[in-house]
Length: 319
Ligand SMILES: Cc1ncc(C[n+]2csc(CCOP(=O)(O)OP(=O)(O)O)c2C)c(N)n1
Image (cartoon, rainbow, N blue to C red; front, side, top):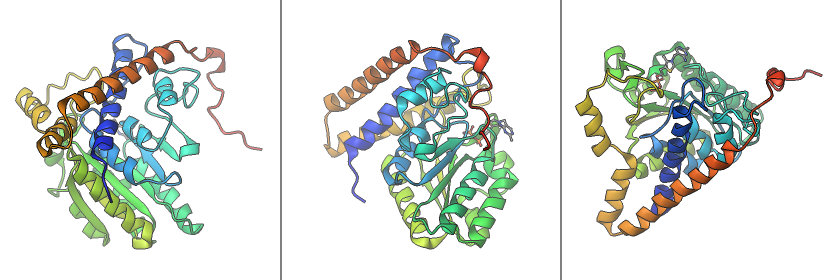
């Protein structure tokens, strides 16, 4: 797989700018309820974007924005959904935790551990219909201690289904530290219990995680059966906006922001390699901010749904 470093950098930068624009809506109370950003986890989103085909399916979590963007969900419709607008992906009925885009085979759930069973269903369908697509079920480290994680890997392995389980291990499930509640030092090593491929990679190194995900996706797409990729990372904000986040040491957070920021790391690497200039990277950052600020202004002008239609589009019509 040939990587285009500037494109990887630009995609990460646009993802971060997207979430930073959304943060404004929390401060102004335009966004109600919890907002979980992916800031710090952009490289994993980019890895997805590089290897998926339009017909592959992705089922994500409460922390889903970058996965949606990676699956080509239109950013404006996604932002409008997050801002609960009638023009949103689900006409404002889903909000940030439940964006559904059947056209792009993307969905998400706020129920921890529930993304994998849905992805398993897609994988079963693909196999039954003889389609060359893969289903990617994404979850956090916390979700891997749910029964659903184990049940899905077992069934996918037993039936050789095209399921890729992508775990974003950001070390915490809200305030619960991964290592305090997990029997194995890594999540990837659990793959051997199901006789499937498992790999752990640095999910803050965009080239490493992109190449690893590409390899895993290729293996599964070629009929090799399910696979598990654990991508390590660190979330830079609280679990949700409003989280006091006093369970993580300030020093730890500061260190991670310097050492494990995927955008800063890649910026340093590209400059060291002489692949680009400070000016080019700054311009990419400024353009992404401008693009998302304009999108936000546009979305803000959209109408909210009429409360009288609160139940519209919520249930499927059965003929
Ligand atoms: C079944 C269920 N239990 C509890 C919750 C409350 N909850 C929301 S996010 C979360 C932690 C998830 O941690 P992790 O899977 O590591 O994902 P992260 O937030 O770190 O991305 C919990 C317990 C929930 N949404 N669903």
